[in-house]
Amino acid sequence: MSSMTEPLVRRLRPFTSTIFAEMSALAVSTGAINLGQGFPDTDGPASMLAAAQQAIADGANQYPPGPGIPELRQAIAEARLADYGQRFNPDTEVLVTVGATEAIAAAVLALIEPGDEVIVLEPFYDSYPAAVAMAHGVLVPVRLRPCGDPAIGRFALDPQALADAVTDRTRLILLNSPHNPTGTVLTHAELAAVAAVAIDRDLIVVTDEVYEYLTFADGDAAGPGTGDGAADGARPVPHLPIGTLPGMAERTLTVSSAGKSFNVTGWKIGWVCGPAPLVAAVRAVKQFLTFVGGAPFQPAVAGALRTEREWVGGLRKSLQDKRDRLCDGLTAAGFEVVRPQGTYFVVADIRPMLRRAGSAADTDGLTFCRTLPDRCGVVAVPQQVFYADPAAGAHFVRFAFCKRDEVIDEAVRRLAGSSV
View 1: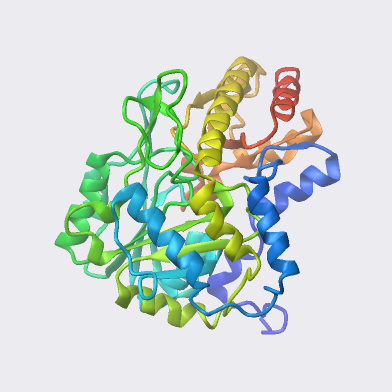
View 2: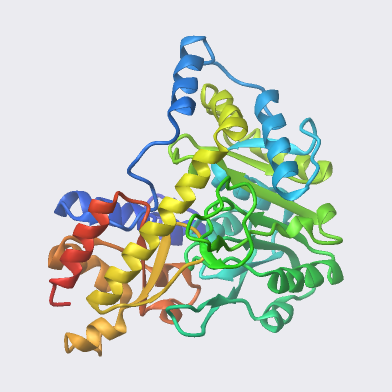
């Protein structure tokens, strides 16, 4: 076949389009409610938005420093110390990136050689396999499996499956907690199992913690940095960074961003923190990807990290209410849902609804989601696209609840009234 008819290199051909682009385009073309892509439909704190506008007016419109402006790097270091007791030198151990997606891609490109294996939790965010493919690496999934009653259960990590996945070619574990798309927040025991494997086999861990502040009531311990005590008495599930565990600081790169914490997903201000040699490796790659970005947004995010923590606590509580609103509505509509401990997303099993509609033989989530907008005017995302073996997740779909209450209510009304 001519290289002109198939110009894209073979390893990247599976990644020509994302499911989010497809489903969002479907929402636009059909006028459906988009509960597929995870972006809020309300803005972040007014003071932060005003600070960005002021920065533009003040001339912060040219290239910022390559590692990020000092004010933001210092604010990130302060937040990690205040929330988790982690100490990072803002000059050498903090790097500002164009969102968490760039941070992860740059880390993978910097740290693995062709043929190296990268362990990921499955289902996985769709940029992870693409980043591994760009680096000529080998993706090795370790599946999270549903456990317990769905109403109070979760997707759990099997420590033995993780240990069994490691080979002599394994170089890196790409972790994600709070986990997209399942909503699982890894427990201390699960993280300790990951740490034990990483230390024993001398592996690097890159941990994606973009939903670090967005965990919900499902336990007795308070989560750090949220600024609220959960008025109903229930405390949010605690997020524990794996880099705080013994022996892990020197081998962990922690990734986060402002997008999810402050409702500014379009600003693309992310960061990576870790030991200076690992951060320097990521910076070496990052400078040839985007070089820099988000000049007027960086001082605004720095200010928000210092002054808008109470706002983030309010966002967390609001999202918890939205989670419950959507879970209850989906259950009433006939889905079986796994109530998430964090993130923006609810995973729903479509099989009970299909059985009720007399079409139990068709449990393909991709077909279900592609036809759902025409059937009832709602967009979801098929979870099978987040699996190396799509059949393993074919009966699950993902709905986003980071929307206004009236939008969630209308989506639930449409789903309950449909014949699917």
